[in-house]
Length: 256
Length: 297
Ligand SMILES: Cc1cc2nc3c(=O)[nH]c(=O)nc-3n(C[C@H](O)[C@H](O)[C@H](O)COP(=O)(O)OP(=O)(O)OC[C@H]3O[C@@H](n4cnc5c(N)ncnc54)[C@H](O)[C@@H]3O)c2cc1C
Ligand SMILES: Cc1cc2nc3c(=O)[nH]c(=O)nc-3n(C[C@H](O)[C@H](O)[C@H](O)COP(=O)(O)O)c2cc1C
Ligand code: FES
Image (cartoon, each protein chain N blue to C red):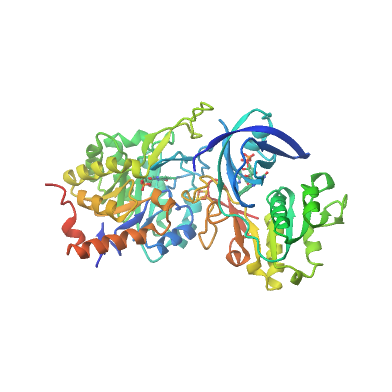
């Protein structure tokens, strides 16, 4: 997969820390797949597709800051779509998203609705203003919100909302967000015998994106997040590094 | 068909080896490659301090090749000791190391000794990391000194990985003089690519190294010449993607072959290649030994 250049057509400020960059190319992709985004002269970083023609980015460091300085009409390189995506199954599904991790879940909710799958989305953020894509989820099914400060929805974590649900109602759980949140979702799925039915989009340090360099491999399976993932089911993540540690750009372990 | 190969004193169940820098940063991914049928594995090149490597893009795929400038990302030998200990398993684990000079190479080798690797591979040939590789790659005295320094510090076999230079035989002889047990040829070939729309070089580091089928004829010639000139084992690497390629390298004189880029198509390529080699030898009633170097006529 060679990089192609695309032009930014429109930039939408979603929250104080995230922007959606619309591109003049529409990709044939499965929600959960990502692209390597090349900010010329700066770096190349992985970003989930939030629409067939857009990425939704949270500003965290050098590359994302450089991206935030770009304007409509500017060009970036895009390599992808890469990796696997979420596999949609069943008639009724639960989505659990946190922060910018919600980005790949919004197109998943829309795809599910198109397939007449009933969707319940649980979306968490620090505060009201940081909630992402609330309208897209509302249009695709039922939504519950949790904010740390209680400025909207339940005051507390989205996990507290999950644990009040009867999970047996759902035939699939789809999660993306902070790893501590996802690993609690995996625990709940495990306790309700739904490990195999739960899918998680992982965040690991992706450099090559094509499965050769080894920077994104998870222990102890050696599965490559960039190529065999980023979406894995709970079964693949049981007794793994998931929820415990990840590696930085040099390969050193960092605790989660 | 028996494919066991005694390579610098190591018993390999087959002569396919994972090349350095490919899926070699963690024990788990090395183990996964072992399960894919590799006869031995080489780790990512490890140095004296943690490095995150060059800014991206670090790879770009071209037709028949991969261009990379990873920039030697690695967690440092101190951190890698525990990973290496975990990687030890059914097949030999060779640790690739790099340094700015002979004494740094020695420091890294000493530091990794505790984890008891089955061998060391000296990366004196990375084409795109400032201060490493390139300065040693074309300097026979530096290659000899580096090899001697590491040989002094360790008990296990030491392989020296060479750059595809016009004078590769001179470098090979220098490694042999320094006590190398084998030479490995070749590392990636210096290369670059430019995005004609933006005008930016396609790699974050601007220049890098090319690997994959595009470099196979270059690597083959290097192996051919080294086999003629040296008394130690030659390990071939560069563009091997199927069993025919492997046979070609063995006919040029390689005792074993390393495979890197082909993992991109199939992580189980090692089993496919050794199965193919075994089938070919059986059909032709030949052995690995009987075809080694036959192209020298
Ligand atoms: C499959 C996948 C999908 C992603 N999708 C999105 C998305 O839709 N929206 C979004 O805002 N972010 C997404 N991210 C995270 C995004 O890649 C990082 O925020 C970004 O790389 C940070 O780059 P930086 O230079 O601005 O930050 P830096 O200052 O370089 O680093 C800040 C932090 O970002 C992470 N990071 C840096 N470089 C990488 C890299 N090459 N690969 C992975 N993580 C890195 C590290 O955790 C690091 O600590 C995704 C990551 C992955 C792996
Ligand atoms: C992504 C990538 C990373 C590499 N990293 C290293 C490295 O750390 N040390 C090294 O000696 N060679 C490294 N190499 C070179 C390979 O080990 C090998 O010599 C080269 O790729 C040619 O073999 P191939 O055509 O089978 O890939 C790397 C190659 C690639 C593609
Ligand atoms: S990022 Fe290189 S193997 Fe996954």
